[in-house]
Length: 354
Image (tube, rainbow, N blue to C red; front, side, top):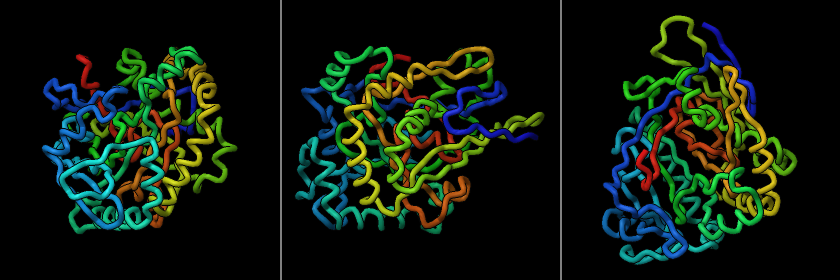
């Protein structure tokens, strides 16, 4: 058995690496309710919440709509994923529209954010073993169609992905268990597989995200506490010549949700003017892998991934138990892939037939 380290932003990757991938079933049954447009930014989400979600009030001027077993899950088992959609406090029956300023309004609601942190901690620290694997996370940085149109006028759209990881306009938080990489449904892709589907390796390694972090290293000096999360990746189904790859993930630690969100909003606004040039510069790079050049793209807006790691995530990645939130700036992959155990999810877009 050998151990290899893939440092953050590495552009040459050992051809022996294997990555875990699992297919997640699209359960929208052909309904086009989760495809936002400028005319309907909530994309039918409001109707879904009225039909299937339950009001959850925890104090403060905001509340959650709890939606169990969402139709585009982040887990192979539907019952191990729920979404908490954010709303201003109401009567428990009506839902307010989300606005561009809604994140700032949320940040000002210190009571709600503090109570939410307490609620998340209780979820993750219950006695049941499975709750030690419970992750809380969400994605920030939503690209409207009108944003994409303006971007296309400024830069070659072939160098920038037209959307970001936050696929829905309304703020929403995922509460989901980790996926064990030893499960039968998890496929371990080797060199031939990764050469065939060339986007998967740089996506799993979050290369585009790491390069953007390097580019903005000066801007990130006062952004939380920089840490390196070590994710060990090795195929448990491989008996001989096993290689463990320790992947370094650059993350920034915060003590509270309020602190993390405030820092992200400030940094996001400061980077908007320079972001497109950075994204284009990232696209000029490539990974060297098994004699091939693997290209990758950044999103059209600076995205941020918020992670409240599980008890096991902290132990596995060497994270101080006192750290409550981790931010991954500019990530191009969701947390289910970049904390240990991490599995890359194949979640086809609802209007895709792939």
